[in-house]
Length: 312
Image (spheres, rainbow, N blue to C red):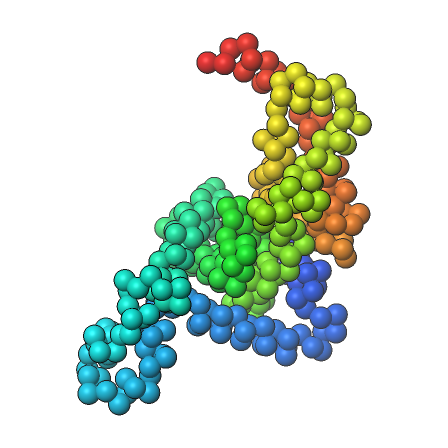
């Protein structure tokens, strides 16, 4: 599986085309990119702000006319400027502070997960300003996505789906593209996730489009192609397929191969016009998971036997 040639920004451009971020007509690229990047900036301006700043914007005209302008300019709102719903201790559903504190839990989870993203790569990890800025970009994207998609919000593992996209776009040798990698990645991430967002929606876990349905299809394929292994896993040792297949499917094999190889796998998955979770490429993806099971058959037999015979 050779995939798209490395270097020269070819993968960055092709992925944007495959994810329908760039239109086929190259003449439309400048206007389309300018529109999308401006839209993402507005998302950040509206969603990544402190509630005090939101309140200040809502009451801007009043604040400018207020005799307490000095208090506002120092960074704090005066007591008279704070309504009941705008008070930090308000529990009202419409309270921006209440929503802010509810979001803080997700934001903390995103922060923890982003810091754990590919710790072996200097691009994502370390104390350098470059790694820090890349982590901030990942966090911004995931927070904006969570706020714009309240039905899904943030689910652990989304950071691993996001990382290859951002890495490819930020590594584009064309500075015009690399400098706007955060905005470009956001929209491509949304498009990519739309193809298999049902895997991240807990309410759909047991539906025909949910993650359990996909895992069941893999289990059925394993039974058809290697009944001995299937019986050993699911009958003899009673290993739930979710223990090994959940991560493979939800993270598109990003954790099972080294980073460079996973990019080549994604080249193939993204090339399916129906998306990575439907169509021919999805069946190839499921068969890739099946091949992994069969290739690791002997190692799994040995590991499971050791666990059963000597669990300590």
